[in-house]
Image (cartoon, rainbow, N blue to C red; front, side, top):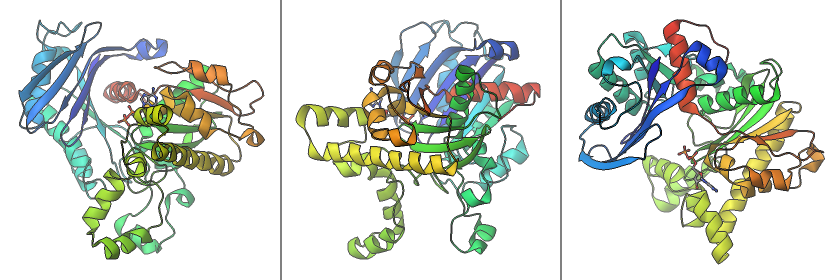
Length: 415
Ligand code: ADP
């Protein structure tokens, strides 16, 4: 089955076409037939398209909205010029899987999208006002362009964390606010945490019930997840993705009263403060240079930039503190898994996070660690490390494609 995986942001559309099937999943032989991204939708859009085994095609076109952008992508996908293997017409795309950021408390599993599901996703707009409307645009566009014959499935960033107990998901604020407005921690990056936990099982030979790991997703957004018996029992992101670790442009954990203080001192509105914490903080805010970890590491190394160094150290220290607290949260874990752009590619950051944690049974092997980047998968722990340490590249699109297949085929799935 060929599945179009769509991930729509406010002005972007990322896609992959993945060929998969039930026996293909068992053999891990799914294929990404094509992938691409459309950026700056709404003005002169930048489009990057790549068919399997071919060089990327880059072009610009005025694409006024997500429907026009998707239409552009679909025309390319079926064109002889693209020559995507197995795709000659729209009929060769059998289902569409959508990444949806927020499913709230009700949408706790991947589901086939019908009118009722759309209403439920719309109901979660309050909880994710930037993300869900963009995700919905993807659904509306795909429905229009494919028609009712092609099933569409929603896969939620929040759903893997729906197994968290109230002790983990409730904030220590008046309980009525949870009852009235559903103010609670939801957690995000669920598809990534779930995927790397699944790969960990395959690499270690553990069963679902034996999966007791801490997964550390370090990308532009960053989060940690405590997984016990295969299920998420705690995670660092909260009502929104701003809580927890230091990120590219988000501050992570902060004293909530800073908002009131800055409101008075700087005369900032709540919208401005929200923008400050989400878009101008984190690595960017501390360094004053960039949100990009690779560039910061270079600045630190080449020019001994003091604030680049500080930003990286604060980033690593926060992650280290979370590792310690999650080991306690889980009464010990069998393994720690690093993933995401930084977690997969930076031996330096991984080593700094794990520095001096031998007393907790965490010891990195310098050589193994240095050898793993650029999409490689494997262990980086020293022989003496009681907690095993893994680097596992994430693949959220693959999990979305597989969930889409299972929903369409009505096959029950483990989480
Ligand atoms: P997103 O969360 O947007 O999917 P990614 O998971 O791709 O982002 O992560 C992006 C981050 O990964 C950036 O900070 C980037 O600098 C960092 N990164 C990518 N490659 C490296 C590398 N070789 N060394 C350090 N950081 C890297």
